Length: 589
Image (cartoon, rainbow, N blue to C red):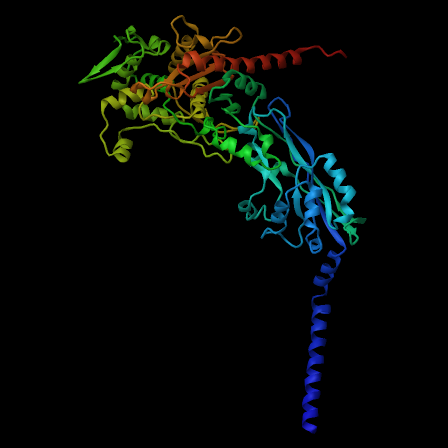
């Protein structure tokens, strides 16, 4: 009997000791943790978004502005007795959508669940009037974005969008709420860290209904840093009007610094549709559009450059002394080689052609002869030195820049398992066949020619000091090339009279990239040739270099050259206005 009492006493003592130990464990060792949990029952931490930095063009024109947006959220701890059908009615949302948001697997018990974005003032008034019926429901003010020029420059400026699940795993973003807006495209994405600023925070005491009682602590948000892009939005607007319904791209570069004055890809898209989350019908319209508005043609489209590549062949010929400027070749409309005939674009031929006339009138036979004397390896050497066949290095996420291609005998052996023939050199020398380039590459080549052989890395930030890779060209080479390119635009027989301007002396080169299917007798726009035109101005002291590509546009001189003219004139009209303002006498003088 005594033994049973002892055993029972020991058990009771052990249970009491266990309770005492557990109480001490909770109240002493983990006091701070459970005190915080208790505080969370009456305190709410409200994040206040930082005003995002403003993006300006090179002339100080704001391209975006911050606007207030409103959303409604609910605290997870208040879901137990929530009338979900009534809530759906209040928010004017399908009950199923409410359920999906409340039951998402990645919902945190400590993070408010965002139910609806983009509230208007009527929505807010209705919610506030009924909020006492829905404990934990509250309206948040956030910072949204408005893109002031719509589609103009959107591939450069980019847009904000909701953070993705993949992005939430990044170390620098893992603390972000699941509905945060961050830069997802273009400059907004590239400079997101600088633009986003530092969020603020308010700690408030709340009652059982989620109503604020008093402010406990507050930390002010810090505005993000502004950035000044190198682009001129006036050029972008001129380009958009000039292209009309045509698809293509235009890139304009300041030769001395590599600053990109314009980078337009058309058709484009309106970044405003992405800010509050793109609607399914808008996304479908963008992705199913046959003209691919989300494709950045300036960096990604790679096509044969046509006769614009003759600039590279001509530079190689002068540098390697393969021909003398006064050496003439006879063009009868084609060049026979074995059983093949390599035709000239002018069926009746150009007659006797020297270097200058060969470029001005874009005689194919002249450049077949030049290519035969050079060989493809020498042309390849100068093409690569001028920036072709490789990325220019411009950063514009999420776009991956295309490299294009400059072929040579080694490439054909390795990739095609075939020998290189003289016919390959003929068609490569005039920018056809395997040769492919992007608009930004051709703009960079033209900038190098305008800059007397210095190749600058293109940049989208104004005033960037960038290293230059010098292509050592003889002064006489540069002079003869510039004289000939001036003739292309300004001489009676030049192929680019549509680029001639009354306000600035322009030099340039037309190009037509053939679409092979057209030779099979197929008609329609999609079988038309692609149009190219590259230019710089003014010829004597170039300030702008341009490359225009028009998809299925036809002839470069008829279609692409007039677009380049409008872009160049938009730049110089703006520069003239600036000079007038700088020279205007001050009223106080």
